[in-house]
Image (cartoon, rainbow, N blue to C red; front, side, top):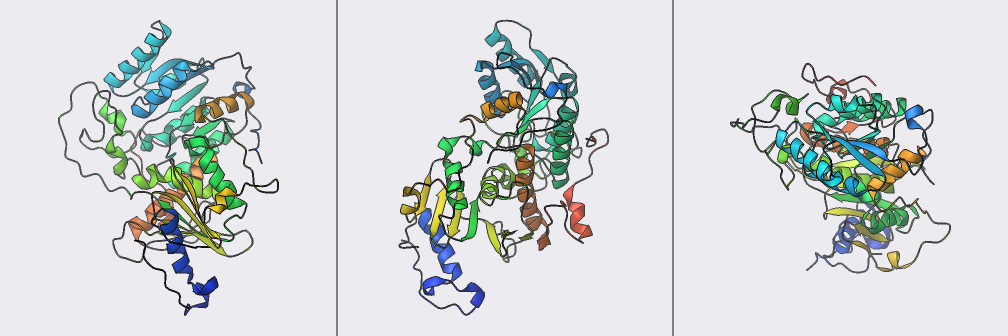
Length: 455
């Protein structure tokens, strides 16, 4: 049974809302109602890239895009299987620091093409040095993404990089700079903008068309932050270049939780440790906060403030404050039902990969008109959108800046939890204004020999 919503007058003018409800009452009831708990009666295409080099020319449809795949865990095996079957692509090389995964990937490619031509590399730089490879697909642990993306851009490769795009805020900005400088096409693997029957795009169109009235808040239901790694050292069987797996991260002993040996059909838990990732905050946040950013028309912006939860030790409840173009603010909360819930003065919309619902139902039952917001529909397959943009030299639906700014929102929320203080943020300058301590949190000291390349 749903909690009751009491009719009361607010003691605070800033908390007042229509019909005798407080702002907090309406937000809470809308979230519960649209998630199915049961409360009643709540009321243009991306610009083309410019200045590309010869390798960035428009490609004829008859010319295959040649690919190298870096990091052959479960995610890149999905990509490999798809690209092998794709008429527009030809896989030439694979790379992994684990011998078993590397040899398995090569075997898959050679078996599909009926030859033994696929090259297999331990060092991704050897793959990037090949002039016959047009583009790379990067699905390594997050702490490697920025180095490999920047090196790939400098090598003239177009890039598909898995989300979350970066480990730090500084890396996110550096990746934008490198991709823009070298005229590359980068698709972030946040496929919710392309796939799932367009339900995320539809939710965003309804929100941006004002069908919820004034947007009051957004709730992003995902897991929690990562923690420092405290795993004990284990004996390691031969065949893994552990030092290279660690890369820029601090030296530590091998543990199978970080890099399980063999070809596995699960996602390893390195993502739960701060040295390598931001936890579920960045893993799922890079999907769901991305949709929140899209709905707020903030693909080139972000929040102006992040506020930790008031309850000591709380793992949910951080609040990200966005400035409205015409004044005022709208809050994005870390919490709520798993998915994204948009709450406005006329009701609410909930969306995840399986559902798109509104409360009241009539909000989504009434079709959008010609004057409403209609976002360009990308190819129904996220990889196809990338390939199309490699040919046209346009920016894909989840361009590098989209991915970089969405993961930065996740990083900001993590910083609020880790340091438990309120932070002002300038998304235009990519800095915490006048806050030297917080600005120091935007990056970390990499291990010698694994420095971040210059764009």
